[in-house]
Length: 473
Image (cartoon, rainbow, N blue to C red; front, side, top):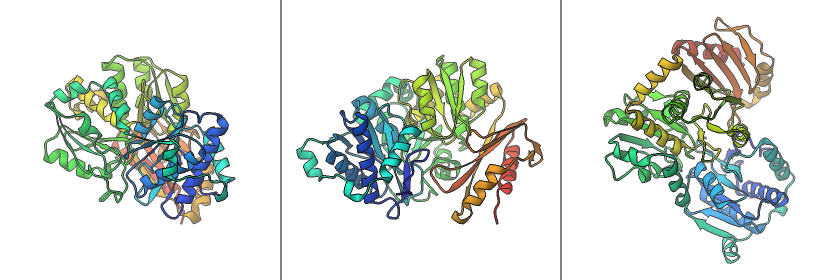
């Protein structure tokens, strides 16, 4: 049970080794005891899942345990993105929800996420209670009934998750204008839970949309992992160039992250997309509200905050750290380095489908290509180039590397003088023309090194310089 730990976004484990039916049942029992003790189980819980191995069966296991505890379950009748679960939670007014998904992790992983009644990530205080409860449970504590018995007691109700989610998107985005624009769009849901959403929304007009990798496949073939980052979007880039498309949009396996390919086949990184969407809301739509960024996201957001006179909040990595600000402040948009963005009048949760639609609306309303939009924002805030490097952490060196990171206090990196050091989340070093940071991943055995600078060469050399400083032989 010590292996069940809720990191930046739920608990994840390797299928059949850590992520087993018995462990999932224990997690479900822990959630059941939490919501019953807190009095938030009256309206039931939402249960969703992705396209990974066994996700549907694991979701059924969760439903059986919740029903065994007398909790009404709204169980999805098909895989769906994490933000779709989140919005259904809010629309149905349930006490929260559970999602079986490992998001962007490689194929051998699966995961267990808990979402609170507001549709967003549970706070650290809540996940601490869940962990403590789960760690004190044994198999004999699990209360479970069969799906047939749950049905007889009216404790399980199957729902189509798109029924309430799709109308919400029409309220937030001018989908009619997108359909009539005549754009040529290629989308890639990476065989995941977001498949079919863009084709369902964009059809019947002058706009042409083609979806690749649009069938469920838990092997995620030809992908290192189902994450919309550059190395996993080479096929989409080729397709955009070959078909002379205007833009390519990719989702991760649970549909809460967005990746963008411009009309030249060039990858737009998540920091650029964050800045473009934020400026669109502020400049073209004329909206006002706070912007929220994580420490490893773009400093362009600070500059946009100054230009449009809106507050900017900065948090540690993870939407569970963004959610409290979303609930207290008038937040227009929030985003993080991973490509997850959330918006006002929706849920305090990353939504890749909504983000993609807003990017298309941006192109339609400005009548500009993705590359032109990038030039526009650089003319406003100056050029910003970003890079990330993931370094595997061998288990036998983990503590040694942690100690090394905690004690490091360099004066310069790769010859660049460090002007400021902070420990908001890991270590971040700021230079005259940018920053570089490192932190341990909350979902994988990795150290992530991030950087942003005024030139591609500058960001590459500082990241490599920092990587050399944490090498352990």
